[in-house]
Image (cartoon, rainbow, N blue to C red; front, side, top):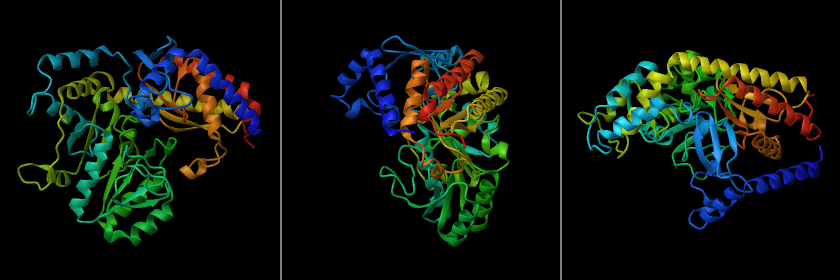
Length: 434
């Protein structure tokens, strides 16, 4: 593989993109004056400038230059309903007609809480937040106070929100808790370190599938070892299911048969509105009971009527357990199809994931942890991203792919064909599977 050839191909992709998107470029340059990098959400930026999305409908997006895309990123898993589900829109409008900011307990929050607890039986009680980030912060706070300990076990490659990210050590933006960072999917290291630090550990925070680091599924023996270790040392096991709760009818943890002490939620459950929640064992959550508990938890918009209404409509009318199962099956079939194509074409390209979430990787062999992706050439991910844009497909620059309910079989066929053409065009730049 020639570095100069990859650079040349990427430069050509940048040029085609720039020439095709003058309105997005103007929008970007106008906003730089008021926001650093014209950006308030780092994941949405990519060079030479990001597209400005002007409209969404169903599973389609249109940018400022009028190009239409099949949406295969779906708001990084929050957009499971697509962009215009009438059930969501009607629920939000009806809620707003009764008043937007009610400054009190309202008629909508209890029914959503009941629906979530019944959907995810490990959650005996819960509290709402505005994001998955907040949910994880509050779950960790609950664990620290419940156990009276300070250390939190996390895993390299883990992402639990904007202030809870981990490489080999916490990222610079991560809150200054006492973290012990261990390798993901390493049973031996987990057992040894949990036993070594057991009396200090308040919580073990883990994603059943690491999402942001590349859709890396947690091995069953690894997750079981965390459950056993937490129980043995008296720590709380916290499953971050902000992404993975959509991967099976009752969440990924329940599919795997592992019961956590606390669970965090976010993304799609708010029906496309800002949402987060944390919950689990009632004895742990009792700390937040204003009548008897010792912990305060505030947030002006925690129980806002738009999220409460949209979330309930989405879970009861659209993304039922049966619908979640069907979407997961579609994702499994699509990933198997793409991996079969890569194998047939003899290129070191694969799609990892669970259910309706997957990630493209240019690497040989099994991906068990983020270290296995260290050798991936990031320029190939960029080439794939711009190739897909040219095919009318909107995905993630890091190769993250998300299915939503409105996507059709024709959309999936189109995606698979685009991957085939990508391999054909760039075969000389791709490593061999051998």
